[in-house]
Every structure is written in C-alpha cells, then in structure tokens.
Length: 276
Length: 265
Image 1 (cartoon, rainbow over the protein chains, first blue to last red):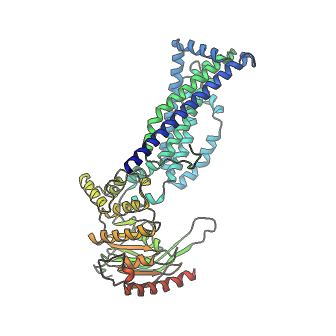
Image 2 (spheres, rainbow over the protein chains, first blue to last red):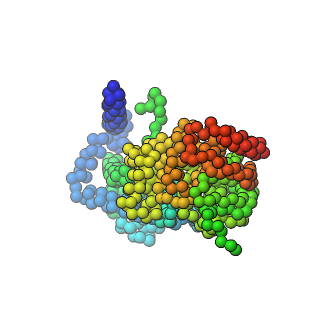
Image 3 (cartoon, rainbow over the protein chains, first blue to last red):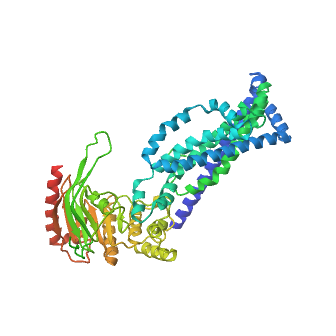
C-alpha cells in the first residue's frame, strides 16, 4: 500500500513536471509565432513596409547574410568584443570587490566616486574612448567592460556583506584563518549574487560593444545595422537586432553551466491551489 | 601573581563589558557588570537569566569574538586574546553552511583544523551514527528537520574534541519533545569525553536536568546573582528528573530568583 502511494506520488510529480515544461515551451513558441504572424499581416495593409519591413523581408536579408563570409566576419567581431569586454568587466568587478567589501572605511571613501563614474552615461564617454583607444577592437571592449564592471562590483560587495556573521564566527572559532573564511564561507555565500550580476550584465556588455561600433567602426553587427539604417533599409536594421539578440542568447547559454554550483539552494515557490 | 589552580578550565574575573549599540541613539550600554565565576574541567554549568542579560556576551568573550571592557577572561589560566580556537561554540542558530551537505558540515571543523582526510571521514561517520543521522549524509541543511540540523551542528563541534564547549540556547527554537530527546542525546555525548560545558538557557527544567551547577544572572547590566549546586546523581534520566524532590526544590528557588529579575525589567 505505502509503496503504491509513494510510486503514484512520484509518477504524478514527474507528470506535473513534464506538463509544466511542455506548457512553457508551447507558450514560448506560441508568443513568437503569434508576433511574427501579426507582423506579417500588418505589414502592407496596415503599416507601410518602409517603416516595419516584414518577416519575409527580414528572413531574406538574414539568409543573404548567412551566405556571405563578410557577415560572419562582422559577427565574429561583435562576439569577440562582447565576450572580452564581459570577461574583463566581470573579472575586475569581482576582484576589486574583495579587498573593499570588508573594509568599511576604504569602501566609504571610494563609494561616491564609483557612483559618479557609473552615472556618467557611457555613451557620452564613447568618443573619448575612441580618442584613447582608436577605432579597432579595444574601445569596444572597454565600453562593454564599463557596462559590466559596476554592476558586478556592487553585487559582489553586497553578496559578501550579506553572508551571516554567525557563519563567519563559527568558522573562525573552529580554527579557520582569513583565507579559509574567504574560500569556505564568503565566496560560496556571495556566489548567488555574483552569478545574478553575470546574467544581467551579459546583455549589457553587448550593448556596450554595439554602442562602440555605432560611434566609430567599420566592422561588427552594430556597424552593419547602422549602415542599413543609413540607407533606410528597415529589414537590415531588424535583421541586425535579431543577430545581436542571438549573440546574447548564445553567450547566456554558455553561462548556464555556472548555475549548477547553486544546486544547494532551496526552490522558492508560491504554494496554493492556483500555483502552477 | 600566583599560578591559577590547575583544576580550572575557565575563569571570569570582575568582567565588565560595555558596547555601543547600532543606531542613532548610540549611547553605550553596560551588558556585564563585574561578572566573576570559574568552571572546573568537566563541569557542566548553565547560565540562566532574563533575556538580554549578557549571558551570550559571556560566551562571546570566552570564544574571543569580543573583548572585555575591563576585567580578565582566562582559559586554562591564559588570558583569551583574539579568537579562541580551543573552545567549541554551538550557537543559537545552527550556522550550518547551506551549500554543504550534512556530512560535509559535520566534517567542517575537522577540515579547518587540518585533520587528515581518512581520520576525518572516520570520525564524521562515527558521530553521525551516534546521533542517528545515518542516511542523511548527502542532504543539504534546508532538507533536514530542525532537530536534525541541531544534531548536525552539535556533532560538528563535538567531533573535534575541544575541552571547553560553549552552548548558546542550542535547543531554543525546537518543539518540546525534540528538545527533551536532544537533551538526553547531549548528556550521552557529553559523557563520552566530559568537556567543560557552559550552557546558556532560558529553560529552568533544562538547566536542572543537564547541569552540575547553575548560575543565575540579574537583568541588565548582567551580574552573577546566585550559584546553585544541582547535586542530582548522574547518569541522569532527563525524561523523569521532574519527579525527584531535589528537582522541585531547585526549580522553586530558581524561579523565585528569575521572577524577581523579570519583574525588574
């Protein structure tokens, strides 16, 4: 009897999970299909294609691009500057957070300057970066890193500071030195914050890279998009943004395995009859 | 100065502790006022008193997590300076690392003390078995019940065998039944090595059932009010101590003591 109850419960649980997954995917595909169909239907009879292009025109443009070596060169350029900028900004943010998070005086000294630096619109700094670093890869990487650094830094500091004092005290009394406390308590404790910052700053890195390409460049998807806009080719602009979104998606997927280190976290959910 | 007598595990001598609480109205607060007492090796002492009377501060002083404003705190005759890694500290919250499995949590203290891996594994298995947690080694803390987490926290500290163990209301948040069961388990674990225990509690029944001596504290600023020798035979049956006449007698005396202090707050 008990065995049967347990098995039935397990089966019901697995069923619910499968249903939920199917529902999520069906929903995602449904939203995309609906949007594309509405767009195709509206383009022409309702809105002039000059303004909104149409899915078929965009698809045609994408197909042309995919067939040309030129396009892949541009895509690689944007992917490289985004990835490098993200890595540089994230690394710097995490590394700088450690010496500052637990030194209250030092942190309070630098805090206003970080805030000022962060509130400067990076777009406005773009031309200066071009002046300093030329029009090659470097200014794009710097701009991308700029968009990443502050968020990662602030989140890491916050993550380190929210680690319960009790865990640190217990570690110290049990014989842990500074290094052990850092490795065994502060690092894993701050990790959820750090990874959350990574997830939100990855798209920001690409925005930085593309802003750089918009300002001054002769390569990259940002450059392609801008060139299309200059010629009033709406399809090219939309195709460009789709490619950029795909690059972000690709990079986000590469971060996915990182979240496996957070397996220990309990899942939070709303409970009740209407909970899915 | 003469050497302190050898049969003394810890001592507080006229200890004062003032601190400035967080917040705007930052007026220094006196937590302890001239607290003195000592514990013999192997003695089980309970500290009881109203909330906020500085009992936990006493433990923090012995663990070296905070320093006395005046007076002396010694462990085996040596003043405590800096974090005292020679004591075990079982805090009110279980303070298990949420990202480590139960067994890895029990192992944590041994690991920090650089006990070789094989020895570590052996002791972890032994202690997990002692408190009946076998089978839950790979569970994360949030997957365990309150009682299980408490057991894991206690054996994590006892596994590395320090001669003084500080316990700060360890059974506070547990339900009444689990509490008594854990009291019983604690006495059995204590009996294996008989470390000196300083046990902070609100629960008079618990204090009597477990201790050799009970020290009552006044409300803030905390001072030692009285000391009681429990004088109940060991091993004790925590499930039935209440039936002994000595228990009644002590309970009434303690309650009178505490009631006056609570009324004073």
